Length: 85
Image (cartoon, rainbow, N blue to C red; front, side, top):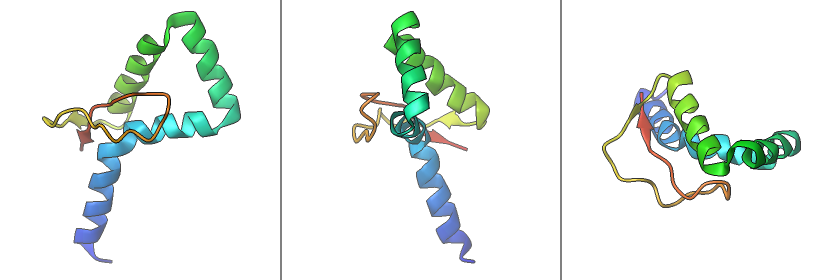
């Protein structure tokens, strides 16, 4: 396979991984219900920060120096930090 293409795909996905996690939550009925319950008990901002931090740690990512991404696809968040491997 074309290594440059594969690298390009993986880098683009990694930059958007946090948004993808939140999209998964909003599109999965059971996860969304649990997300809403967690938001009610601990607050949406705290939960979102904790989830973002967990994604970074789980996949062993580092933050990019770029500004927050404005093209958020998930309705659960308004912005997120881009990452790289």
